[in-house]
Figure 1 (cartoon, rainbow, N blue to C red):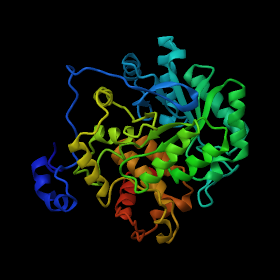
Figure 2 (figure 1 turned 30 degrees about the vertical axis):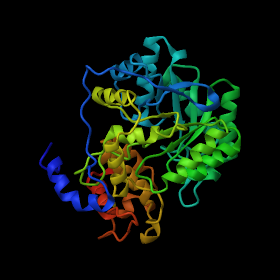
Figure 3 (figure 1 turned 180 degrees about the horizontal axis):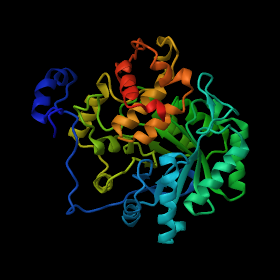
Figure 4 (figure 1 turned 135 degrees about the horizontal axis):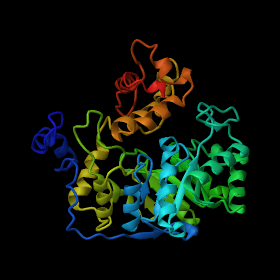
Length: 406
């Protein structure tokens, strides 16, 4: 562990007062590495009315374009791969297509991909005025993206096709796109359809369920969310209506706080989510064989130990967590009304996941008057976060990394 990290013994000493005040005694540090001698076990759950049997820990192919890594996951029993049209500028879908074609077992692998469209970020609604990165929200553009995805994936159907990153119930029920997704099912190009959400998750989940056409919801869900109890209730509602639930952003990053002194216990964070049996599967991003082994190890025992539960309780109580709540309370405190939550998501991609490509794309998709270009004109940042995030520091990091260039 490098000099910039607090050693376990040092951390215990520095954190004792805070821990004692909350009744805890364990710091939230990274767990041990996987050993080859440990047994491997795959636990499957059923994804709502789709009836798909999927491992509780699947493979998020957001950051990886390694065919060997994907093949090993499939060989170990992971049968669900989650990607998106934009991930790694299309290379994520391409490498999945290569592996599926070589393996020759397409019918046994469940592939999910996502389509994202232009939106009015202030009104939380789709718009037909598109950009290079975000095409206008129309049936025509959805089918254009879908055909490209099918070509990359070397298949003639998608198992789960998501309408990506819905901010509001109104986006979920935007008829041109909702009806287009229904059409993909009728044409056999998508077996099942769903929505994904990083914002206002409880409201979006309920809207998706009540729309009556979606089979799956993909939602952010983790111990760091202030509104995690409300997300949990919405997930239960979805499952009661036969809608399958997939959880993402389950770790809330790689470290708990900005400077990275306290690393997240990856396994405990996953177990916390999977303790909710209404969650069918999780899709943590995998970039190394060690991470894949660690995910498999979680399935050996889904129960949180007493130590892990204490770690989760302590971590959830910390102020200034790297995870942005997307509550949007910060926007009125910015003189330019910049889209700070999106910038904080870009920061997380860069510093919590090490994915600078996705971070750059996330920052660059914002209009100049709402993103890093306007932030560069400020001599100092006055935006404030009720949860203790140092917005100015994170924006400066993004500017220093030149992420405004995409």
